[in-house]
Image (cartoon, rainbow, N blue to C red; front, side, top):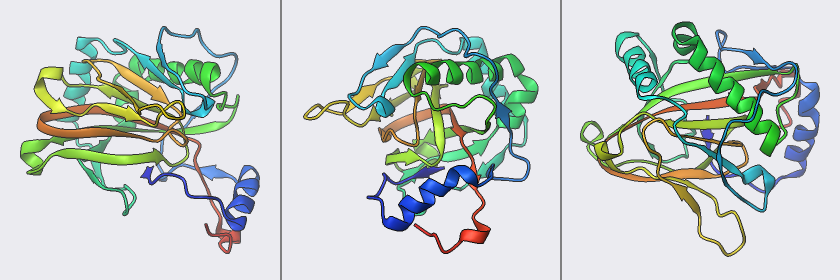
Length: 248
């Protein structure tokens, strides 16, 4: 779930944050996917680091995460299965794209690819952010996202934001670079006085980052069609029914 950047904490929001670890967490739907990580993290895959003075804002770039055949397989899933189109973005977030959820389809049809995605998240988190806890439940929210300028009637876009409750967010490029103009992945500057960090993904490339903490966006897609696979490995949502007075 994309949101705006973090707001300064209030006394109530700070108290709510302190209590969250004692409140059961759930996914964003009754049939959400659930994963648990056990044992030691898998071997760390090769990646390029987009470094930052703030550990939580470091970004890992994995070139060639998906092969051409795997990219084509994901497109086939989207084309041949009745995926659920969703509209769950924050109402204050400006974006122009179309989104379908596909975590169950990806897990059922391409389990090896799904497992590799989870293993990369586990390994890279253990190296960079140290947030995934052994035995804790996480809720993968995997989306097939299309920025099609012709269909939208205007440039595709999403403004700077963070991903609510996402311990690891992943963006995988499913389009050839020549199929669109723009759509460069951008991240908040890594150091004081520096320019924002950016990376132009090639087909099959992926970026992994701490989505709940690292602000990110893309440059406008001005022509063509840009398609990505995106995942938010969500920590889940506390059910605050007894504590509704602790609103942020």
